Length: 88
View: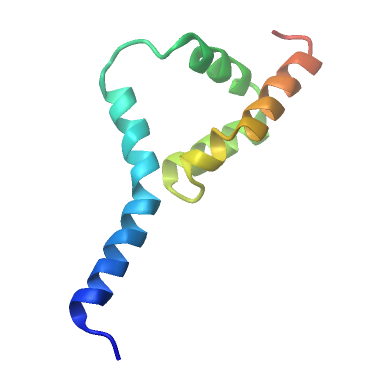
């Protein structure tokens, strides 16, 4: 049986791994500076894309991680959908 300190260390490590990406995203937004151009393009591509909007809300609710939402594959899919719709 492991001790309390070891259990708490495991819990803190797991919590931090889960919370850190959202913390970093929040800190980036908290600067109140305009997002970088790539982020602005992504936000533009999210607009009107129901699946992308839902995923963005899920990320903000903590049900998917920012790492998952901002993965190159997901971003490419969002941008590709916008391009396919002819609205870029």
